[in-house]
Length: 578
Image (cartoon, rainbow, N blue to C red; front, top):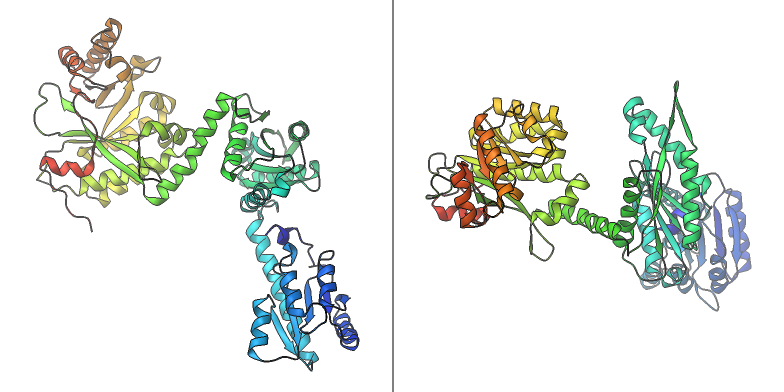
């Protein structure tokens, strides 16, 4: 593929035809005919000479005589096809042999088509024109497939393919190379204030700037959005860092003019060495991405080199490895729901009538992965809205399949992440799913964390108000982690207050935690809000929160999370889904 994209573009130049025929008269005739058609011509007297010529020139089409001394046309064609630049070049075989076996042998060895002797010149001209037109169309489609339409740079697909070739080729890999991941700073400001047309123009200008700043043999690609990748061949890390700094300075010194406004942008750049070891593509990309985002976290407009001994970069890279795993799990349907009962502390007897839906993931080997492993990465890389939507759909479908009068369920709690609170389409999505599955809103309670609510106060209030007006309820999760918890609480129209488990779990042995839980419970009750103690892990903690008058408890000391299928074991049949 790289040879196709790197071959010369003959859209403006005359195509070059390579003719190979041991008969001089035929060779002269073919040259004259092709030159009259406007093509350039090089000629060879033998198949072996044709192969040698192909190693030094880039022909657009090859005319090969079938029968030649030293190396016949079919064997020559087979050898030519082993050359990277000729894997897709049209080869037209000229033959006096028209039996099926001979024709089959030629096609199997890579011939695109054939003409028989004596040569009918109109047929030859038509075949050549057709093969060249087909090749031009293939090149054009290949260009579209592997180039970014906005900037004309190679795209992510091509960048990954070329990098894979470097990593797989021992000859290339023996050198010292480097990969860069570039993320623009302040691009969103231009896009948001001046519109997408301005953003597109900025990307085109910066793409040109990157190209002209790099060496001709360096590869720069647009990976998507405002992100670019660079592959530097035969470039040690000292030189790579100099190039990265040169790029950073070029972008920082660039000024973007739009109408009457002037904008400055920056570039956060992550650099990763490729030093001869066989490294999986995904590892190189995740390391470069991690280094880039570490540069952003350090203040933006910086260069960060990935070093395996850097603990922060290793942590970030581990997080980023989860991105592909989470995305694949969503695509493959490998997320699962479990439920954990929430019980009234006045009486822990009887079947669960309140429970929280908890999400887990099944890995590629069928092992269950808890949310603590993948949620941090999902939150950092904005995958939580997709997970939230999967949970909402799956949970409401489950509740909708419970027979209307045959179960005592009162509350199904569903968690919403902070990033979902900023999703303008979340409200209509929830409303649509409630209708689709025929779920009564009174059965649904959405849990949002205190931290996320405070960070997105206006949108959180709108979401809470809209859904509570339809009958849904809300719980404020992890309450007590914020610095101004009590000050905000009276402004939030929630139904439940979930007291943060870090205060609950040591309540029987820590008088400070006991005082915090006691105060939180009393303030919640003063505001007419029911309280729930999380992390009730043992009988001692259960007794302590009950004595404080907390309304509900949740934790391993009461009940562990269970697969949804076991809900049937409590005597609540689930209707078969269609």
